[in-house]
Image 1 (cartoon, rainbow, N blue to C red):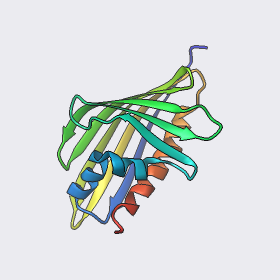
Image 2: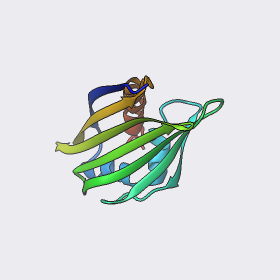
Image 3: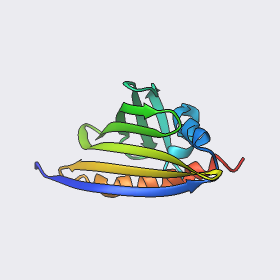
Image 4: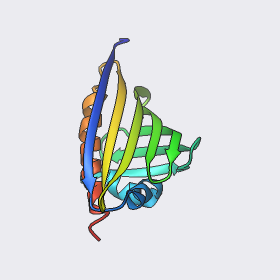
Length: 150
């Protein structure tokens, strides 16, 4: 099968924190481990974490009884406290299931931050990753808000 499903997904959140604090929650790998897991019983582990323009992350989304999803991220453009743009290649078991271009824009709104996340996804061979991105990122962005409740 050689089918590709394309999707563009845009999500917006407002956080009770400055753009600097929101950006720091992305830059810090320990913080990312806390907020990026989309559900209880799923954890994110990093084999490599190089949050810088030109850097690369390799992470595993681990769920008991299921093959790991492995994401390789290449950071294309990072502007301190303002934006993060990266390409992501995802494999599940022994097959590549998607590729995506993801942009994160942070804007100050008073004492808060507006986050705009835009994903352009290519899901391969019936993998259904476009719905996986929708579910996973919705949960992760909701979890990110918990970083600022302390």
